[in-house]
Length: 152
Image (cartoon, rainbow, N blue to C red; front, top):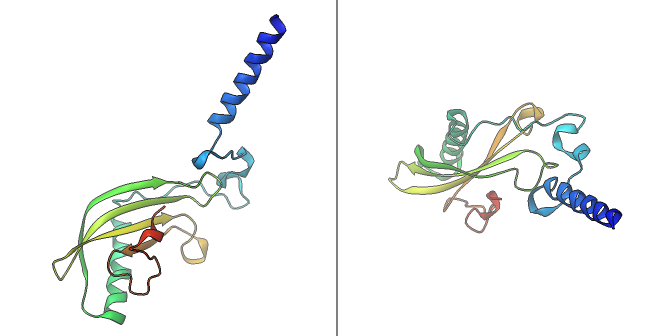
């Protein structure tokens, strides 16, 4: 009788340990498969959504693209900046921080901007970079529909 209770307690403990080791989406990620354990490790040391360097990167690329291809539209300021998700697909994927905000453009319109800050995807894999989409201005439909593909 005592052996049965010990075995049931052992099985329950293993199940609970397995549940606590699961990554996003309910799938198990072995500790050796985490991004931190790769040959070139990724630790998730990313700037926050409100970081001026992140918002400056979006502003710079947006203003440059608009001036070069589409016309005089320029980003002026951001508000309602907030995080959406952190590593939503699990610990074995490249660390990403997903964010959303509103951007005020020089035509006086507030638009939603969805963006992600991604580790080791900058120039030559050296640093972080930003992937972004401004709602209503995805003219090539790269993130269609309505910037959904820029979100987790």
